Length: 301
Image (cartoon, rainbow, N blue to C red; front, top):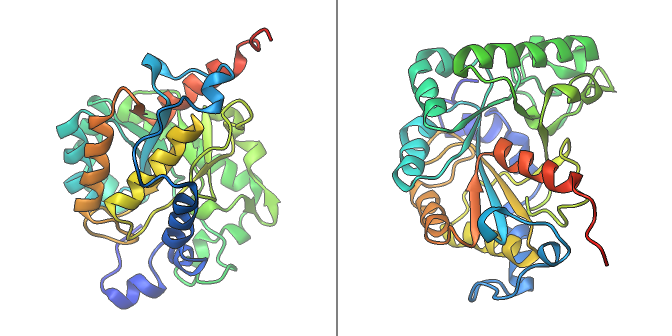
């Protein structure tokens, strides 16, 4: 997916522009956080899921997944160096037709060698053109005009192509635009078996309860324009619950649907300074742990 050339393009034709029109993500999330009173000190008590038997590694009280969609230049230029500087791991979801994948192939391979995740974001970032604000979807990449078999084949082929980049076999998937239907039918049943976990757009990204979370329908937040303080407040909400938060960013200090490099750096510094409290890792590592915990027999009363 190519970057828009000017501000008008960003407002009307940039990928995921419809997300901006769906509602003020920042204001909704911040209102929830303020209502929970989480702008103060970090909660001292372990969360409900921790007390009920769900355990995070090394005694952490919550987990954070830092993910980045669309294989954007600003992710390699700003997000990846910031993560590496603090020893944090992120997940990068590549639509493999994006010219930036081929043009910066060595950068993506270096990210994988450093322990970051390369995730599946389909071949062509196919989205439903019929939805509001989707004029940017090219007709030949319109999910409405595709069959379940076609989309399933392309998603599975993307796994093969990613394996050629990083040599890995296990993978997670983020749905382009959060759309689940190809030609009016749910295509996820055709691909679920190929993934450790699948992300869907919705909510604040904070999971309510880990034991009941469906790994193949994990809610994610897609922040745009958020401050560092707002992002940190969301992490504190996950700590209070004893669960996890899934951030899916796009541009970092550039590109579209962006978060400033400063806000991103403030979030990363908070996570690095609170490693004993918050486990920050790739989405695939976190979800493998979640699956293991969910498979354990319930604790005796």
